[in-house]
Image (cartoon, rainbow, N blue to C red):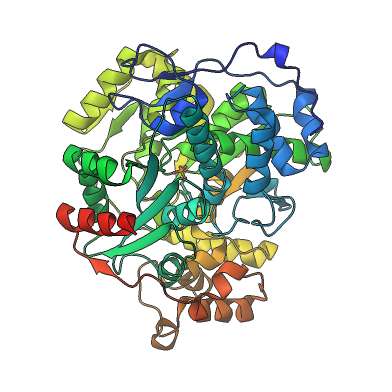
Length: 524
Ligand SMILES: *Cc1c(COP(=O)(O)O)cnc(C)c1O
């Protein structure tokens, strides 16, 4: 690894503080990764941010992606040895991605540059972080174990509406000292998403379909997490503690900063912008993790001017950014063609507000209490102004999302998934004179049914023609590929119909049934 990073620019070991100010002492990176959430429900943020020079940033393109990532981790002075960081990065960003560049940029001739974050094993952007977090989780656990601060293994439990579950399974499979269990709503995910999960290989993984919807899954997992007697039993019987892998873990956020810095450097290296030119970044947003990573990249010195926050019909973030009021008291949850953005409570927003208030943990604690009591909070004028000066936001409704997929395909011969289309449509509305880097978060073949609707002018939610509806997800993707000439269906998706189903079980959503299933899994 040949990096020019001068660590004397970034003195001291980076420590992590809690957004709600409940934890008096800061924690190390490894401890923040293992803890996930701070005591009292707050989130960890770095005490200090490293600054990168324009030279640091542009020189990244001389390195393979895994070394760019290691460079950023070193800039953060995380408490793992250099060779360990290199090993983790080599495992995270190698042949598990289908392109050496890991996340290439496709530029359309309208000033939009699509940062393709879906070349990993599960074809959605969650891989960018979930190939990496397990490596850090395992390395952090080993390091704490050696220091005598840890004496047990972990079981990661994930409730998923689709993308996260498979990405967690792929990321954690084969990782020593960790097992992973995923619960998805029976009948509530697409054929492709279900097959992706139930055919996962590896000895330390388990998948359950749960009777009920995603909310039932999530509630069940939350209840399991808060059952202290169950936790004590797992620890006593198997020396295992439960943990989660959701995007509130700093170890999932940090890898996402890398691709914004790296993406900027790529635009310079390919002559699409000059070094130092400002760009805007547009992100299809759900839990606010991805766009927050772009904000951190900006704070660290990447010449990003404005962050475009793209919402679908669940436009709580758009309304918040435009008014300073976050209000879900009277907001219906809408099912859209971009399900990974169908979210009402955006958990990483807490970190963003902490940063924009000048790290005022008492404001954060108050607003989060308001949100949980009144389903609503209102930020002060200074924070609203800070928000408005950094972010612009717009939403894309479902019919527009589908029509944009069609028009971009017709005009640019590029097929995008519905999440990317939401962002692209917002970027077109918000674009000023700067080039826009648009986060492209999934391969189209993960969402073939809605891509088919888009291409055939079928309304969102309307039934597919009978013969098309009868196809498996893989067959439908083949049909779309034949019709469009887009034969780039990822290997991991193309072979799903013939992959062996390993997990066919359906369990009830009550907490006792889920705990029983987890116990049986962990006893093996
Ligand atoms: C998770 C996800 C998003 C939303 O990202 P956040 O970090 O939660 O804002 C967008 N698109 C796809 C395809 C996703 O899987």
